[in-house]
Image (cartoon, rainbow, N blue to C red; front, top):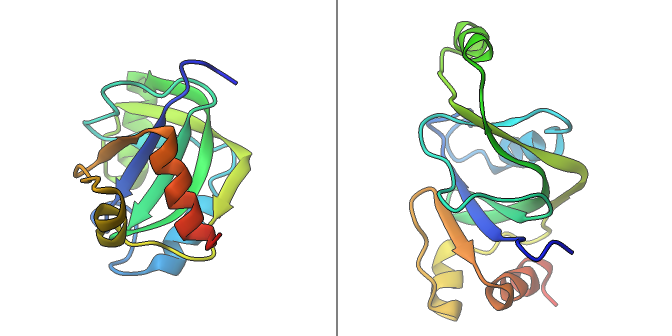
Length: 145
């Protein structure tokens, strides 16, 4: 296990690629991520996410899945930025990769409100870092253990 490993919640929004309030679309998006990079427009996790870090995904105020980081955040080369902008209409400045074999969709999707009440943990707008105990409690809520 990587001693620099971190745990972070990514808060996804319907302003990106998701239809509003469509949790099934978000789950399928994560399941189908595969070897494709995860792109960031402007902001990226400020403390970085080295290989073997864990990312939980949140959409519509609920934690719905997780994946393990394969490659830390890196800059998107200018030529790739131009290609993506032409194709998708967005400029992405950073990207990272997840290990597709580690993608997990949770059976239950705990709400951020329930997590905040239980753990006294507030969520940032885009990225929220967790400690090991907070992560374990969220897993218990998501797996109902």
